[in-house]
Length: 339
Image (spheres, rainbow, N blue to C red):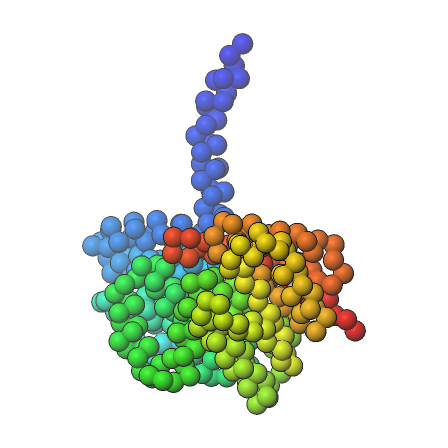
């Protein structure tokens, strides 16, 4: 009568093992984190074990960051995990192999420096990789600096961040330079979820459309023009109108900011739908609907639902971005071609 109970209990260890195997298969960065802890615990045994632990410590933090910023179907922003190979030479190199950014670098006694150099090299190869050659170098540098700072901050690598500011940022982002202005703008936009949710995806689309081309001077100027629009938007004072739209030859983007729920209470969705419809008619390709906090997120999702089955526009992605003690949503649409 109780044979099934006996069978269940005898199978539990195997169920647990299978469960762990499935979990770790889906979360390889967790395996790296535990492996790094074990390796550091037994680092006294050999230098090889110590170096393995240091490499896995770096890999687990970077690869968990990649996973946390999965932008749905868009894999062009951050497509590669990372692998660290220690070498004796002082020069560093990074390249793509087997779907990973392989970083060959010398091991430093200071793990903060190891982590910083790994992030710098990973970003230099793996962030919006199809678009990097198309962007103006000052825009690209600002994007890279902003993203490196974001990784170091979110991973609480405070010692690495101090090295980054002292040795990298201050030398590249000279006071009053375009790089400093854009980096500051991207930092402000990141507090609304717009850096990862809008800036990076929109620049990455250039690689999708033009990745095989040698960039023209006009295209590089266009990437600057979009950055200028974003910089103005990032400094927008309350109550002042700043166009959240950029209409270039290759970048045709609009941002719908749902900032005040009172607007919805008084007028419903009509202000947002009216702006989106106007953008579609004017040839805008990418439209991002953004809101911070539960109420504005709800309004953003109602805006998304209003276009279900629309012939003007189609839904691409819906991503939540943690910001400080709150969260932001970025909903991306693509307008259908009118031609």
